Length: 105
Image (tube, rainbow, N blue to C red):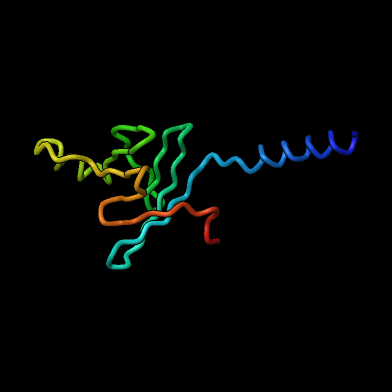
């Protein structure tokens, strides 16, 4: 019985340690261009290709964001929409994204 309790405690400790704050996405377009995202749901932070982006709207189904301040300044007066990362289909424009367990290096 003691072994069972000890095993159960170790199991729960392992589960807690495997919970990740960040979600890593690797995306590839039909023309084989690649990009990556790091998403932190808790802090609502979106990083695209290593640069933190300004989030416009954060929902569990999608995230809309501006790629850069320059694009935002040009697009807003013309009522252009910000970029959208679809969390249901795993797509970002012409890119198809997959969740990866860890970084490459």
